[in-house]
Length: 362
Image (tube, rainbow, N blue to C red; front, top):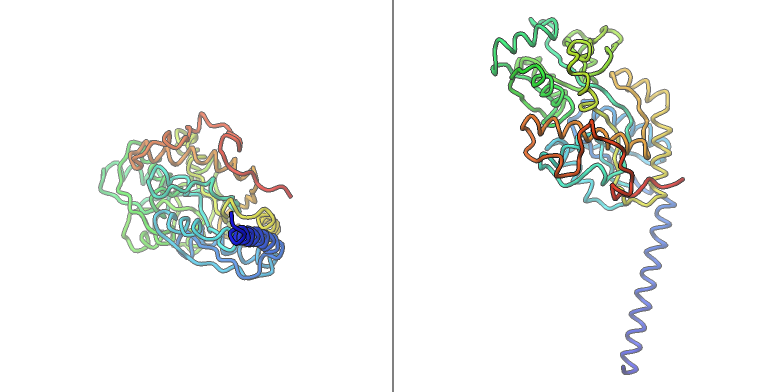
């Protein structure tokens, strides 16, 4: 090698090493000084619904502890997959979060996206069961009345939901299948849209996340016929909503399958120092009296899960909806293609088997 070539090679190598070192230092400094600008949360469902409300309320509390604004932007469509794909394409710098419901567990079987919950660190701020609602002056005073009408008008009655594959849709589909009944499903872009469809007589009833409709129950515009839970739900200013497990005991085993949870999800390759800062702010916000009061007023229950506990929750919840949708013929791909066991066969696989990063140590 000639002298000039050796010099050129040396200069190029030196430049590469310097560039790498500067990038490393910059990343470390960026993580230490994060956040330097506002964070944006891309919310999967329409404004005013439970997903939107839970994530916006949390963002308002978390920004107090992060010291920078957290902006919320609705990005609806494809059961939340449009927002999830958008966040996944953003730099792994902690400035783009997914304002999520747990619909990501159905993306594979529905062919909506190759993204999985394991691509993100999930924070579960609150959870809420779904339920059936009708207009206040509906002729259906009880769940039994509604089911009798559906049986009498086989295939003619319609029901709305927040979207295909949502927990509320799965409750509706599973309950009708359990009772060997048939009603036409009409998907909307969120629970509030489904409620408006009921009030405007576009559908006969709706299966919604109950957090979407508590204010309508309190105002007297809606009536709740059942809640997809093991125990009744008490709503201050309205009364008690009967539990589907009491009304239809054969539904009891399916309750974990359609439970709905809300909270931010962040890319799993974000630097540990940034993840820990987000986690600290999450814990402080979700345990604050103000956040508890805000979400409980909407019929949501504080969960406050993160770390392995949140991963375990998603791993188990994933065994529910995909199988319901597949068994009903709504999803064409079998959950077995994605290594998803049935609920009866679920056990925590551990991070090694999942092939994903654990949460960073503090």
